[in-house]
Image 1: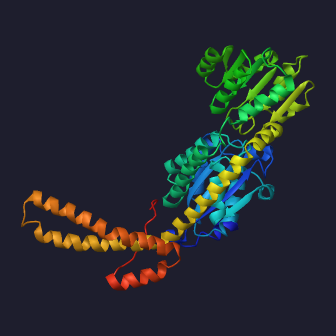
Image 2 (image 1 turned 90 degrees about the horizontal axis):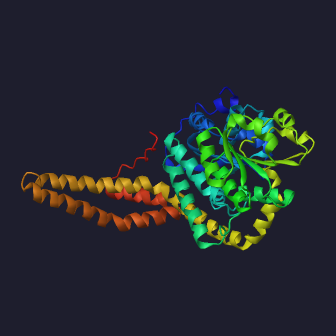
Image 3 (image 1 turned 90 degrees about the vertical axis):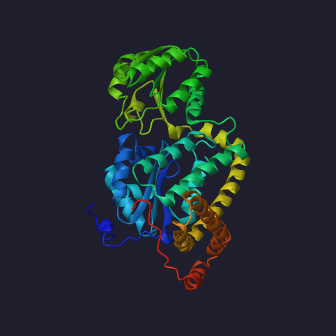
Length: 443
């Protein structure tokens, strides 16, 4: 990174105090950003690992998680500089995506503190999804967090945030009807196909990309009466498994061009940095019958110029609006209840955040009592049997836990009320404590 926006932060000494760490999120979603730009901003496949590694080297942040789906890409960070980090992240993202920063800025949102927390909670609860109540987002958030953990980018702060988010997502689904009869993106795509064709059972239908989305799409298409399938995947064996399961035939990806002329409908849901369906191949496979391509890949799988070919219709995720709005209206009450749950959870996170300032004090209190216990135990180490000494050690551990339980609970309450500093000064004097900052998990 050579930009002044980044280099200006490089000389700042980033201490690891969790007392001052804040959450921020920079993102672009179906609400703010056109699909053509979202294609460039995503972190599909190996780009996620590369992006996390690069992001982890940025000055000004201590932890980071990248959430990249077909509808959104969001960068969550823990930072001591919530206000100034925005420009650093924008500059990094534009460079990584090989686009001009001016193209990116109008289509991004940047949230800090509890607004960032509330946004993640809304995302994982599917309240912010294109398809309200869709189930895929829960697994996608969890996968994003695990990838950040594997890369060493998720420490104490974001681990707590994402673990509470995943727990909240489960609670929303358990206590509301937001996920009942959920309309997934593949389901919406199939509904769009039914609107265009009417009956789907006579059609020859291709499915490109046989991951989670492709699997759901195949199930929905089969439920709509489709039996003449053509499955395409990089791994031919997987396409054959799908053909055996749903009927039809399976082929490797390279065979797609020669089978395009057979297809009435092609639904694409592959993960690829390059287009997999090209206009030249569609032209070469010219057919008199109506042909529809529905592209729910992220980034898109079908070259946009396909729409210019006579007799061919091309739809992307952003064209699923009508089906999505019907689904949203049916789940309006559940969404309102989910937002109430989210608000309570944000308040709980804010209380937890307020207690971080007293964590060093709590640890110092424990260390102080353990030191006293160890000093007393040493006097008895060679005066009693090893069995008796082991009993004394267990008694000492239990005694310290009992003694500190109530003070620890009260310290958290005082911290949440903003009285952490006053409490710290009093206890430091009373117990002659040396309160040290909690080391970050990455150090």
